[in-house]
Length: 594
Image (cartoon, rainbow, N blue to C red; front, side):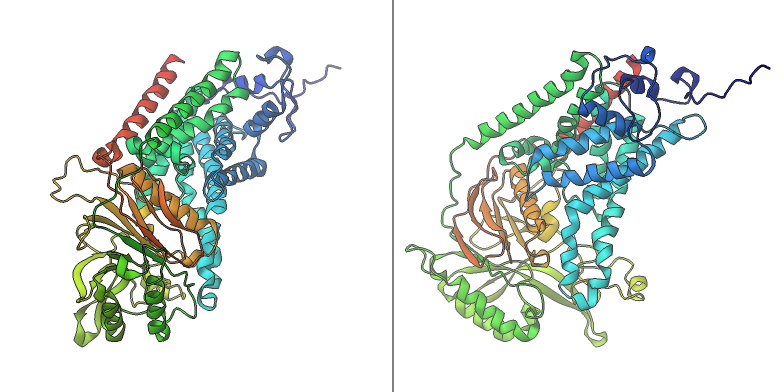
C-alpha cells in the first residue's frame, strides 16, 4: 500500500512569496547551524547556509531576535528600549545605546508575517510598528518613571493618577518610535543601508515628537551624545535633531557585525561609525580648547537656589516667611569680595518663587524693594494675574518672569509661551474635571500662554531669551537667517522649579537639555532652579559655577559673553533635515541596486 506523502512544514522560499519584501530565508540561512532558541523550529539545511557554521553568542542573539515572535519578541523590544535610558543623565553612559539600536535593527529585520498566509508589505509594516511600540514603551518607561514623583507631592489628590504618568504617558509616546520603525521598514533592504533606514525612521519620529501635540522632546535619542560636553559641540552645526540622526546611525552600526557575510560587509558600518564618532569628538575637543569666555563688563550676577520642597509648607499662609528666607539667603556672604547683595548688580530667583500673586501682596513687595535699595535688580519667576472682567471675577493667570528694583515692579516681563499640558493647563478640562482630573497648579482654569517675543529686556543687562521650565528642552527649529532682529538675545535665562521630581533623574536630564541649548546657540546660560541644578555656563556649555541638586545655595558669577552666531542659530533644523535627506537618498539608491 502506497503511503500518502506527509505534508511539509517548510516555509515557502523568498522567490515563492512575491509579497515578501525582505529576504527572510536568506537571513535565516545565515544562522543555519545555530539552534533557534525562541522559536523551537529546526534549523535550515546545511546546503542553504551562506555562512560558516561557527557562530558566537552575539550571532546567536541576533538570530533569536530576528526569529522571535509573539510575547518573546515584545519582551525583547521592551527590555531593549529600556536599556537606552542608561545613555541619558544621570547615568550618561552613551555606549548603552548600542544594545537598543542593534536590537531595533534586528527587530525590523524580523518584521515579516509569521502567519499562515503569504508575507505582505502591510503585514511587515504592522509587525515593525508593533515592535517599535514595545521598544518605545520600554524606553520611555525606564527614562521617564520619575514623572510619578509629581503625583505624590499632593498624594491625597493625585496619587490615584500615578499610573497615568508612569505608564500612560510612555504608552502614548511609544507611538512615535512605532511610526519610526514602520517608516524604516519602508526603506529597508538587507545590508548596511538598513542602519541608515533606521536613522531616517526613528529620526523622523523623534522630530515629530518634538512638534506634534505641543511637543515633548524630553530624552530625544540625540541626548546620548548631547549629554557629553565634547560630543555635544557638533550641535552648534546640526542641532539636537542632527545629534539624533548621528546617534542612531553610530550606535546601530554594530548590528551588522553579526548579520552580514564577508569581513567587509560586517565591519565597514562599524568602522565608519567609529570614525564618525572620533571626528565628532575631535571637533568638540577643538572647540573646548578655546580660552575661557570673557565677561560682560559691569555685570555681577547672583543666582539663588532656595531648595524649598513642594508640599504643605509652600502655601500662601507661609508666603512672608518664604520671602524673608529668600532675602536672607540672597544677602549671604560668599567670599571676601562678595559680602552680600550690595556687591552684585542682578539677583535671579527661580520659577514660581512665591505661593501667591506677587503684584497683589503689598507687604512682600515692600520688603523686597527695601532689600533692593542698594541698587541691585531682581529677576524672578512669579505667577501673574490680569483681570478680564472684575464684575464676573474672570481673570487670566500667567507663569511669568518679573523684574523689580527699588522702585517696585517694572514693566519688563515675560509670560511663558509653551505650557506643560496637565501641569499648567488641562486639555479637555471640562470633560476631565467630571472624573476628578485637574492640573497640578491651583489657579482656576490653569495658566494662559503668553504671546509676543520671548526676548526680555532687563535694565543693566543685554537682551535675554527667556525660558521658563521645560521651554528649555525645545531646540530652535527655524533659526534667525530670515528674521530681522534689531536687538538679538545675548544670553539665555532659564528659571525652573524641579522640586516636583525630587532627587530623581529628571532634574539632571532637564539641566543637560538646557545646557545643550547654550551649545546650539552659542549663548551663555544662566539657570536658577528651586532645588537645582542652578548654574552659569558659557556659550560652549562649560560650567562657570554650579549648585548641586537639593542643596541650598547662592552662586556668584559674571555673565560670559556670547559666541559668534552659530550655524544652528542661523539655520535652525535645516542642516539636520539635509542630513536626513542624504540618508534617504542613500537608502533609495541601495534599493535600486538590489
